[in-house]
Image (cartoon, helix red, strand yellow):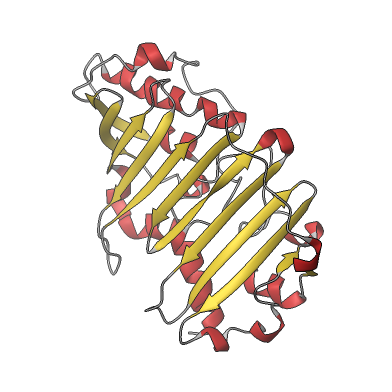
Length: 280
């Protein structure tokens, strides 16, 4: 297997390079239930009277994400991502780390979007870093200005300001199959992730490997005092060569995120063809 294929597989498995492809702008099914009112419901299973209220509370908890002013983090598959989305300034930033010092190949990305421009700074590590195709032309350590015509629709480098949630929690919560309230602002249940690849936080390969288990994956969730989603943890079971793992998504600073700062001009170069080849 080539380094490029191994690197690409690692990126996809982490599923942290898909900003903006997830959250639908449609209202949650059944209308926009009041998070505060719904959060008072207690459900003991999908057939119990309270379970519908609990699910509506979770669906409604993602509404504030659509406002596009928050900080987020995602962890899973040995990778992390964190950043901010600030729709008022049409800007976003995310820092992604895949692998660590013990990995054959690791990567960190610092991606900045300030419409209409985007930049990425790439750092490679690990024993196989020197074998990455075109790595000598990647201008490592500099922010590389991206040609928008070459990243349009690119799940790795692009950002769609019409779809603002990097993790796609609205898509995920719509797949909830059973939910119960476990405490103040706390929920647990199961979720059908078989159609959630578009969410951006779960890779299609991972979902396929789960087989029938994908229909009923355990999760926990928490909402803040205003009923807004603060944490979603999907407890992905082991399948084939894939180990059991938690995919953890958090949101914070609703309404208080800041605009992403553009890189200093002396830290910017134009991205070479090798960069686009790496992520395509």
